Length: 237
Image 1 (cartoon, helix red, strand yellow):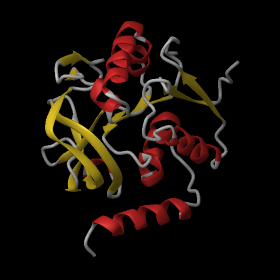
Image 2 (image 1 turned 180 degrees about the horizontal axis):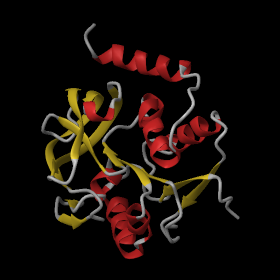
Image 3 (image 1 turned 135 degrees about the vertical axis):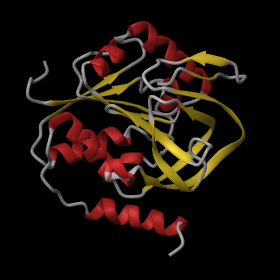
Image 4 (image 1 turned 90 degrees about the vertical axis):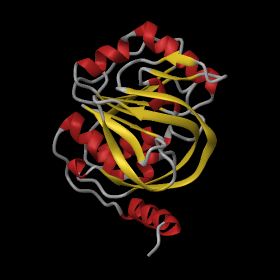
């Protein structure tokens, strides 16, 4: 039974889309909430299960082509995620999960596959795989520091007028047009692994603020050490 006062995290389809350690994003949110005295309940929703509509923050990760197609089909048919977002829930969608939140993405042979339609983006296959470290400057409207992460994808993502770029790339490929990721409402989409929230705790706190409001400060020593180490490895001093 869920407590009405607990922060509800929903990890979507770990049996299909959890290839690159993106479950770490769930763990970071759990830790940063509990460090502030916020009780947390986490649901791991497998692809055979209905997606609950009562979550506060939803997360979905990366994966291969076939699981991505299956995930999109099941989310479209289920409708629970769409209803949750429409009532104001927050979401972090990573890599394959980011692509399938859009209107269309490239399938196993590059064929167009319908997405869930929660983000005004469309994705296809690029000519070469983007693999390696990525650093990007976040949209100033969000007030977040430089992003750091690891990308591994062949996607090229085009942003429609209904979204804003999450950041501008300094190193790496991202969407393929000089931007990385996007955001709209309370949804953040990104190609960043690492996991993304371990490297970018300010993004974790953005999601938490969207869900619960103002946050008390906590000790970020470990996170900032990791951030500094990875950024120093790819950005000129």
